[in-house]
Length: 202
Image 1 (tube, one colour):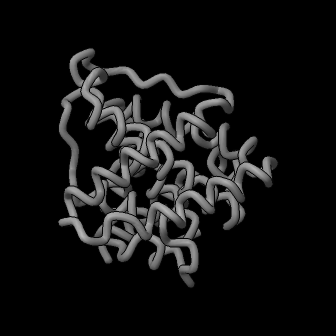
Image 2 (tube, rainbow, N blue to C red):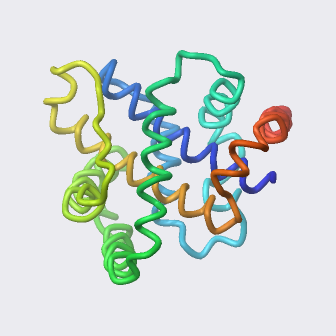
């Protein structure tokens, strides 16, 4: 349950950052870096290794707790998370697509190493956003992001929104691999909330 809770926190970290970007035009760079790096972390031995540390997914844990307690401020993050879980069920049955996406991400991870972190990640986000459009956006239900029109027309913001949705899908895949299911979400909410609160306490 601890590992599954952390994976679900990864989903909610990504979707909460999507909400922030779409509604405010800004988002936590620290949390977004964690999400981006999780896309490239395919040989990790544990869920904590995927994200680097529990502290790096704190935003996701806090968002998950809020959602599990029925609080309304993260309703958009919840909507995006539900959409990603639906997409993940279809994505896992498309083996060729999984292989193609994995090869592309492996290539992106090696690019732009000569650049400063901020610039490198922006370029990686642009590449990943294009990959998202070419692959994941064709899987229904297509996630419709709501927010401020001026933010949703800014190229960098849109690139990061698509990249973060990809990151959320990666965490959803992880959740599924750890035995997560709709039933465990429906009937294990109290246990997951308790586990998430325990994670925050360290």
